[in-house]
Image (cartoon, rainbow, N blue to C red; front, side, top):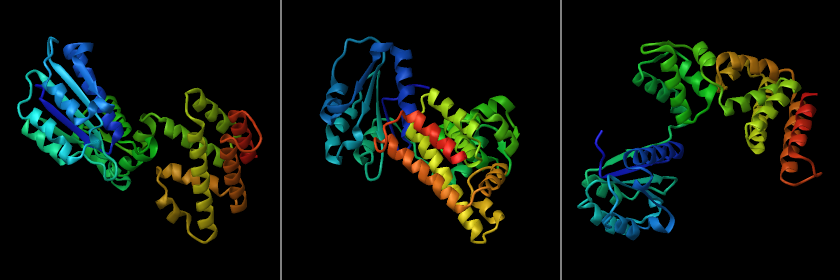
Length: 322
């Protein structure tokens, strides 16, 4: 595909934008070598400096690549010098703007217009709303020649998490494993998709709810050995325990297990297993478990007795499972 003079990659899916940025750098290095890419960020990414870089003469041989980070801070009126420089784009040059949008911080409309007039490409990388993810996953699967059977898309989201990049990688692996035209069911998702670190964290939390101290401690140590931050593990355990407390509270209030199962964001078998484990607790026990994790969080921030954070976590797991 021929290179374009300008690219504007924007949106609130910051992870995907990071991937696109890395891909642009890889193309630049492959096309023109390490010296063919100029990265403008911080003060160097001010509009006047970007315009100057576009207009500058260079003795470098081959295609020139310019990467701009930070244009999300530009005001509409500040885009003028860049727009002027893009009216007559320099030959054998590609400039790419990577804009991470958040809240009211958006790519300036004037930059959209300038890139369009230069014959460039504009692509949005946006996060899909959580409740729309199964539909989005099913659509991406169709694009890859796969058919997800009823419930499989929801199961995939529950199994590997809600990061779109991660979901795409898992769909690509399924396509390679099963081939074009494959029909994929819930069992295929649970068997063939790799458990992510997030899934491992949930497995740790589920082992805690099941009062399986050995499994919970083993998973904790495995995740820590892989470099996972302790506060993420605490967060996963706290969320699952609070979810278990909510389930037990609803059960004791007379809500049926079937109705509760429908509200759980996990595959049917996992939901059934979770409900069975949760019913081994009563509300007071789960409240105490949540308090133990809260104390662990307090200790990890420097409160309470001084103790190695992993020792404190392993003791908390044993206390909850006891």
